[in-house]
Image 1 (cartoon, rainbow, N blue to C red):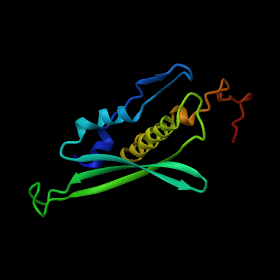
Image 2: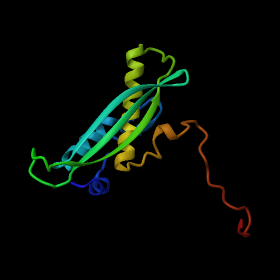
Image 3: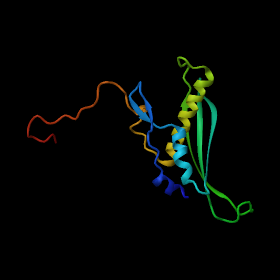
Image 4: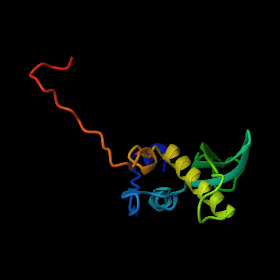
Length: 151
């Protein structure tokens, strides 16, 4: 299937629940589970690389979509894929209570991979917990106190 078709058809609901923060979310595994039935002959890979920027370490995740270019038989010299990729970064925390260094790197990897997939498949995460302040103060639409329009 073509990337544009998958972008239109992919549904990756937020089926995970964070009861402490009181929000729903999706993880990398949820996206991949929803994606696999749509791939057909196409291939998706995700890779990580640790990069240092300044004095901090980041996980650089790259999600690649390889679409069959239909130029010949599989395995022949003319057979190839069209490749599209998106990269996302996540910084490792200096420390995270209750986690060892491998777990901190793993959490950063999962986060970066999720956002690389979001970018590649145009998954909207504007209502994710990452974008909310999760505080008690919620924005409330204010109604004008008079009949005059605000503009």
